[in-house]
Length: 301
Image (cartoon, rainbow, N blue to C red; front, side, top):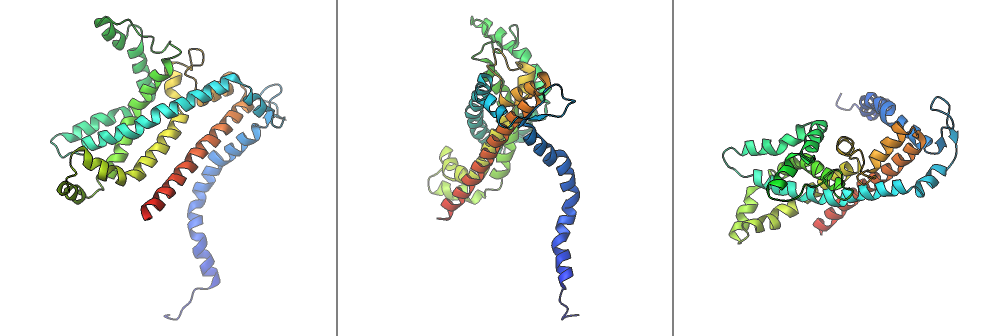
């Protein structure tokens, strides 16, 4: 028995065993993710001539040509990019400050953690309706402004302010989620490092700049990518609060895709928009991996 050596068949079975365990999940993913994705990719090169009950007609790159000259698409693309550059920096920095705040050993700090996390567990539908009431002409925000002799602000009806008003809801909803991610990273940092830094004269805010931020760099990258992907997929708050208006000023790529697919029944054109979104999210994911590897190389030097 001590001299027993595995046969080729045993080695093959040992190699195949993990894949056999993964097979049920792969089958479900194939039916619910991979096949629909391939079908959407195919539909982006076709067009429904009459109705959705008839097979689509192959038209090549005409949907992409239409996309290139579509002013509404470029407006929604700019709105999505605006969402990225405005929301992501806030969701990367502010939750870290909140995590540092609630990581203190104080009595009742668990209540503060729960309070910051409550918006995460609230349904976006409920949150959107509540904030829409707050933004209304006779809502709480405008009532407060009138009390200090400031005219009411058209939060959701102004082409300039509408998208920023929706951004505020996205930020409010995501602060607690990313705070928990940072909190997990902060609690993994040994306290000895802070004590040694205090001896060297690094205390207060300076210790977080010298110790916390460098050690939290992987979490910062993770939150940056997750929040960026979430920002490109913003839909619920837009649908509830502005429906892309006024004059498409708050419409993003996801909302435009929904509009083309389910309101205009332009399924093929919607698949083309979806393909552009896929490439955008793929680019963000590749950027995150590249930055992570670059960070690892810099730290190893």
